[in-house]
Length: 456
Image 1: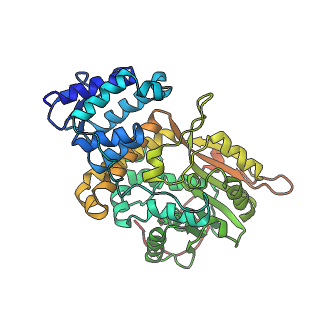
Image 2: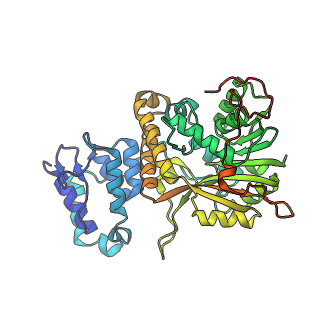
Image 3: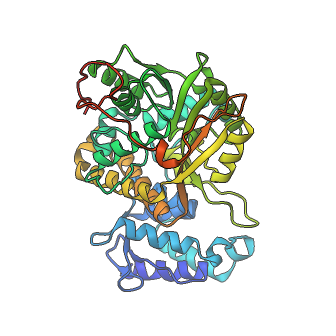
């Protein structure tokens, strides 16, 4: 078929009832679509077959991860995703219903004829191996949560090192004017958390979902705390323990392979939860909030750093991303920041501060994508081509989602006030964000820890 791309675009536009904003390059070499628009390449018939079996985001994701669909040379992934995102939000697309009448109409018959002549009809292609199968167990049970966390985090610490860089921090950085690199911005974020928590020598810190231990290392080295970090990722725990030992901090920092629901050795003077609460789920969030409240000493502070979704479109149910759920974060859930604040307060916390870092996450994700692309061959060697493509797609799409205000991320500072109602915070925000005075080694001036080797 010499003009396959033109026939495919015409058939799709007839089915949708609106012009397609992308150029399409078919496997026969033909190209069609609006001049100057970014171009997607259908590498083979299987790409079209995946879209016929699963129209929409999931079919596109499967085709991209499998390599059946790609961004054509000369086009940019961010630009393609931005165009697709704007197109999917158009009212006529959001409300499009491919019911029996439309699927049996003349437009659908013409589209089916094009697919038939292209040889794209046939059995559903096998799912990419990177896609999660049917989840087992009760939603957000401990066993199912362990499996979901393992799917995403236990893909190899070396791979994460390529993507995240030497800081090994998997949450949005804090891009201060002084930050000249991703590592600088991540260190600024770690320090911001420590200052918000009011950490001082001798305090006991709990880091829920501690990742590879970067916040614990920073808090122990620079603020003199003793600390406990918990994670249910075996690979994270292994590397975090090694980093703590190499830093000479094993006497003051403990890393546990433990679910947050199993922690029973409070109280803690401060609790941090950074990029973990998205995995908790709405059914368990009250348990999460009440559990952290019980573990926190009166007058202690909680720093909850969490991605938030926008409130639902009026009259429409919340729709999670099928790509994210199947390929990236199984069972992950996002809530509006207002809902999170409400549950924390219902659990007994007093919320004292909410800071949005939305733009900071867009910048961070673009840095991670650049790291992945700069080490693409090595990354593919570590985790395979399909998983590397999952990461490139999810991080680029997420960067745009933050930049375009479709999702946000917030640091919520809450306190467990004393029975007398004392929150323990200084009078002004400037006071409790002020950095403590430090001796030359970076340790607060009012403690005596001796010299500690750098972990960077």
